[in-house]
Image (cartoon, rainbow, N blue to C red; front, side, top):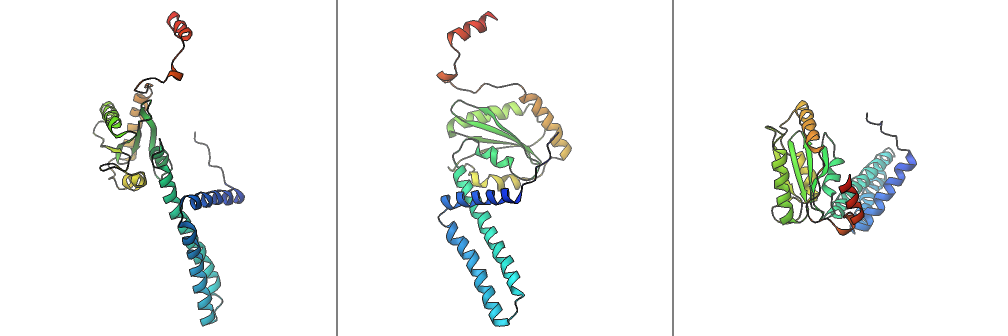
Length: 230
């Protein structure tokens, strides 16, 4: 059973906002100037309206507009800063989709190599979506193998595949969310549940990462003899 979501206190919420503010200010040089403009412009307009009309009722309206403008700037610039920081980070695409709204069922690094190439499997109303991250040449083969393996259990469900990156023909990390949201809704909720069970049964079999095993992960000679004696 899913655990009920814990309520976040007001102090904890302020702490989170402070962390987002600090992170965005370090990543985006235009954040502070834009935030200052978002605050000063509504304040100046509110003062001007009050002076011209003498209606103090415009003060709370101005305060609300100022707060709204500041929140919009913080939201937009912080999302852009996070996307910039996520580019090139292994597993960034899977983490991004896990925080998206809607019924998106993510299996991070369903296929991977020891060079940190990986294919994430995403199941949603559009169908099955494969997102590949890593070296373009190596990850193409990994993506093709995973697509062939999963095609045995998905039936007639549509399958989409994307390679995350900034080169021509690749999908930038900042466009992952909008790209997935624009895909047609080909499956019903029942179809998604049935397909999720079939995928779960297939992926219950562990896969070893492809590629040479690093030396620090290889068993010692003593461990190898013990395994042979069992």
